[in-house]
Length: 358
Image 1 (cartoon, rainbow, N blue to C red):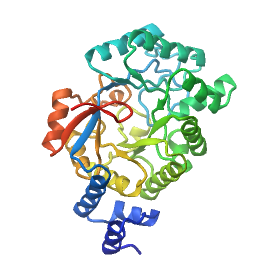
Image 2 (image 1 turned 90 degrees about the vertical axis):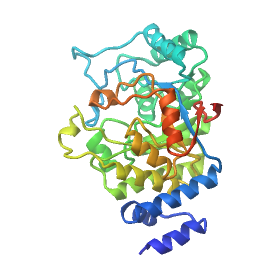
Image 3 (image 1 turned 45 degrees about the vertical axis):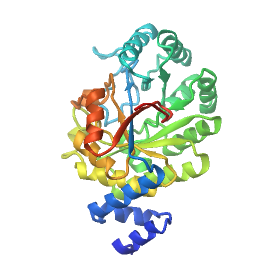
Image 4 (image 1 turned 180 degrees about the vertical axis):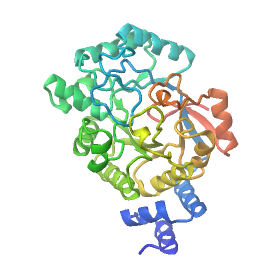
């Protein structure tokens, strides 16, 4: 059985953690000591005191989605009175407004709208590029790639190669939730499977894409399944080296079907523990993100002291979490102040984690 002392010695000796040790860290290891070990591991990868952030925008071209995930309050069926689908020109105008305000990245995802074709998605990309040529376009999670492939009668690799040829070279790591089939059956049974999510990410990395990796916890998963999720990510990273960062967030219950069944949302301390365990267990990931937006300013700051080196985005526009009632806001000056208040030096980055402004 792992113990506090044996795991501490194991980590300090630079040895790789196994799943059992990671589970012990998540459940039983003293929080202060865990944060200290994770912060030391962070300093080994990033010796300076810099914490990065990105100025991005997350507009949604459509809220029509046929996968009907139980945790999502954003999706609408095609006949809903408040369903919508923007034109490429309308989306490009939103992105242009964000670029004028200082955004450098647009993350746009459209769920699974059966009326939107691959040609339509390419039209969105081209319209954004024409209207806001300097902004980095960061679209489409693995489930969306899988859905496009199914709809078009093509392989996911063909979709990925088409996007690459269109000049898209990074993808978000959304749609992972928890990479355990038992959990996905309860949360998002109509999305791609765990094996498909991992295969699409592997193929994307093989083509040359850099992607993020995410995890949404605090619903029906067990702690062991959280570690299973991290293990799947670490194993793939060993093979493909294509993940740029790991980004966890807790389930927000407001207005969703699943939210009616979840009596209590995850405590912020769980978030801190996950950040710390991720830094120690995901030893092949360069960046771990602690988010002011998905949790809270205080939890985000504590995450920086628990091994994270990135503070997420300023978010000019965000809709998905907003539909749950989770709508925190910040600006450039506030973000810099929050990072400094935690004892770090803020630096604005781009999607590739290159610093563009200190």
